Amino acid sequence: MDKILVGLKRVVDYNVRVRVKGDGSGVETDGVKMSINPFDEIALEEALRIKEKGAASEVIVVSVGTTESQQQLRTGLAMGADRAILVETEESIDALSCARALLEITKRENPGLVILGKQAIDNDNIQTGQMLATLWGRPQGSFASQVDLDGDKARIVREIDAGLEKIEIDLPAVITADLRLNEPRYVKLPDIMKAKKKPLDQIPLADLGIESSPRINETSFESPAEREKGVMVDDVQSLIAALKDKGLV
Amino acid sequence: MSRILVIAEHDGVVLNPSTAKTVACAAEVDAAEIDIAVLAESASKVAAEAAALGSVARVRTVENEANKHPLAAVLAPQIVALAEGYSHIFGPSTTFGKDLMPRVAALLGVNQVSDIMSVEGTHTFKRPIYAGSALVTMEAPADVPVVATVRTASYGAIGSGGSATVESTDISVELPTHTRFVELLIGSSDRPDLQAAAKVVAGGRALASEENFGLIYTLADKLGAGVGATRAAVDAGYVPNELQVGQTGRIIAPDLYIAIGISGAIQHVTGIKDAGTIVAINKDEEAPIFEIADIGLVGDLFAVVPELTDAL
Image (tube, rainbow over all chains, first blue to last red; front, side):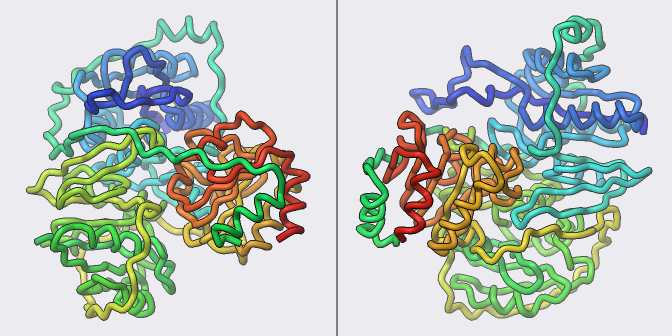
């Protein structure tokens, strides 16, 4: 195939302990380390491996977000993507609008595959990939742990609650990457230098002319109820006694 | 009045327990009339089970050979055809619902409320974000259908004793052929499924090998428990993916959860927060798991677990 499009979202880093703001208006993101959503890194790695096997000629990374998302796109370019597109908006964007924006880019670029992460670790919505596939009128291989391309088809192994499910889909299609699809490569310093010279197009969201979506308002944020620290026991006999007390064994 | 359509999860024969939990959530919406949709190749067995759930008015079946396996791209247009007249369409937040419901939402041109953990009003819901580090209250617009997934660990199954009517519906929408089921690769196990298990024994990276994970299985079998694992243990290949508990795996709420050699990363803990009693066994007394455990035991799992298994 000609092109693979990969979505990258800028999110609060995996290792940051997220806290709710005192006034309940959101979560604290000031001065917090930001990274590529880990599932999107896996998506990009898969696209790069497909290209390296000669099954695709170009990998394009796209992000829908604030101007700072350029950092994550540059990291994607350093990993090996050929060029980047930032659909720029200073407003937070809902999943459907994001899918509609990605659809516009998809129509412009006409890729054989779009690969996204299965979920973003900030809002844990798990919607965008499936919505994009639907709006595009194409198949989805969600939660993919193995992707085998075969001409104009792909065989996808999906991680589901019951185990693994294998499906066959026609291309073009949307794939969403699960954890065990691959292990993303580390970025090397010379590649970071090279990435600075790769093209990064910025397109204002408003220029895409997407229709507005019925928004779900986030009215307040709170910290979850904490579980209280319980008792420590010294040995197995005391553990069993404690479990018997609760009627659990 | 709210009219809620709950999408049944099933394997063609048996209703998945996630459905009764999704109905329990729907029943918390004020003055709701609840119907269940069963899309199947042959729906009668599953429909009979669904009709016996409490709070359900009607079971609507759609029988089609194409519904033999739950392919989201095939099911979604049929659900949209059924959805006319409903104010809410709910599915479980299992891999079935997570795959399917956003496709329904996109066809209806709405956003989805993911992982409802509490109902605050007919269009107001709470859900977890950032691996459960924060809860957000969401207000969905009242002039479009609410498409949502339900965080099943937040709800007990709705009781039985219902006697809903079962109605078959013919739907004449064109179904895509671009997505085809090939096979299901399920590990054979007699142990209770994680979702339904009252007790779960789980192991982490500290087990250090697939072979050592046998300690977890042996203890689980003694207790009649299901088996769970951390992402690290699954990534290392000690156990299959369906055992992963946490933000990106299963979210469960057993009466008893025994965490063995598990440090307690937030991404794991979010999957067990609703457990009745959490027991932690870990040799590191500083492990964060002890902050949330009801009963903690500091010790070497390779000594403690066999001793516990023998003593039970």
